[in-house]
Length: 146
Image 1: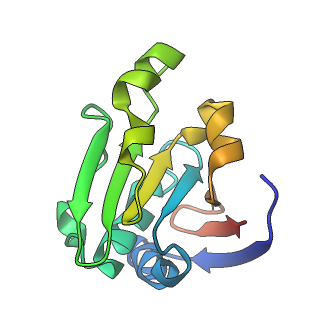
Image 2: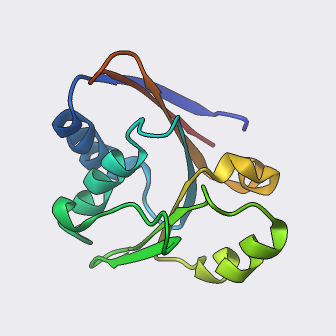
Image 3: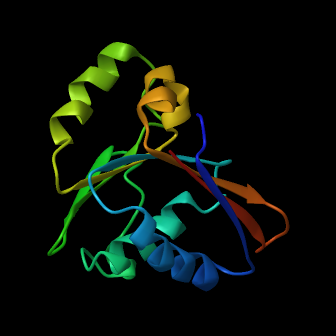
């Protein structure tokens, strides 16, 4: 992904990662598609909890990983957040059944966990959030936007 804006943050707890998600909302205003990358358990869903709260779309305790349902939708006053987990999606055909393209509109913020598995999302995404584990609770979080 070609970055026109890059910022890095360090968090030391899940609470700090959630707070950062709330802060990032101003840079992620719809319509956008964002790929979230990081190892299993790095904190992708954790930062999405903050983004959902920042959009006033859902309380953090109600935001969970859509590992098995694949897509969670949260409606806020100014945006609809789609939290999509592609961890268990292995083929183009499975991906097509999710209808990701149908979710795109002026109010949509599409957050794709494991989106890097599919090359098209690396090129189509408006932004990428990379989460690297640097300690038990420490994370380096990089936001790249076009």
